[in-house]
Length: 214
Image (cartoon, one colour):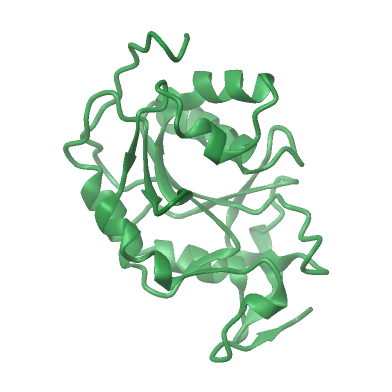
C-alpha cells in the first residue's frame, strides 16, 4: 500500500471498552532506574497511569522488554516484539496484540511516563472517536507538533506501521502525517495537554508530588 493511493477503511464507531496499552519498554537512561517503578507518594508510576485509565478503558496492558515485567503490580504485560526500537514499534506491538486477542479495532495508547493530572483527556479522546471519517486511523492531540500519547490508534495501521519501521522510520512525527494514517486532531482532548506530566527524569515532577524509590 502506498501513501498516494490509500483505500483503507476503518470502523469509526467503536463498541465496548477500549483496550488500553502502556508503553514501558524504554531504558530509562536519564532516570537512573526503571521509572515505571518509581514511587510517587507510595504508588509506582505505571500503576498510577493504569489506575487513571481504569474508569474509561478495559484493564491496561503494559508493553515492556520482558513478558510479565509488571505482573507483580497487577498489570498484564506483553513483550515488545523489537525492544529498543522506540514507541512507534511499541504501538505496532500493541496493535498486533489487540488484533490477535480481540480482532480489529481501536486501542488507547499511552506511556508509563505520561501522567495526566486530569483523566478527562481520556474521556475526551473516546468521545471524539465517535463519528470519525472512515479513513481515520489515528486520533491524537496536536499543538505545533503531534502529541501521540495518550492517543487512539486503529489496528488497520499495522501494515503502514510495519512498512514505516522497515524503511527505518522511528518517530511519530514522521509517521502521523502520512496519508495512509488518516490522522485526525483531537481538538477537545488537546485542551487538556497542559495538565499532562511527561516524567523523563526525577526533576520533571512538580513539588506537590513526592518521588521515592530510586
